[in-house]
Length: 138
Image (cartoon, rainbow, N blue to C red; front, top):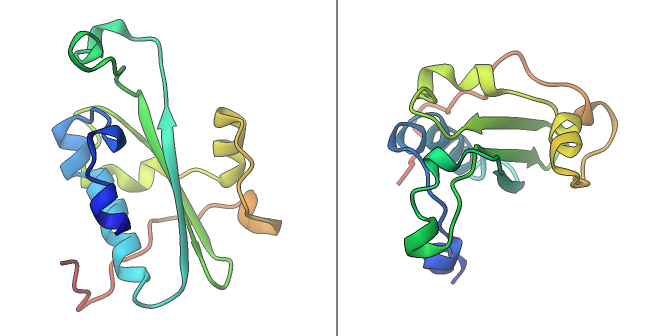
């Protein structure tokens, strides 16, 4: 099952606890809730940097620490939301909207070509999608 495979050590990258429990968790809750409303395509990745000061797991696991994580959520009707969340202790839930970017921004930074067309590539909402009342995030 895919959810079980996501917990393998080969699918784990270092994240600050504040980011993981803050802004990044909120992106996960948004995706979780909206998948009950609409068909979704969720794509994500990392942005690597060159900061050896935060590479705590090079020696033990051979893994560098990403500078940021990105996520794109595409609804069945084409509505899209995209974030680049810095891998820092400042990346708390309350700051999620400040991490909104466009699909074109992600493509420029990563070199990836994402399956988004039209205005959805270059526009971003003024705020993150609201988690619907009654959403079962469990």
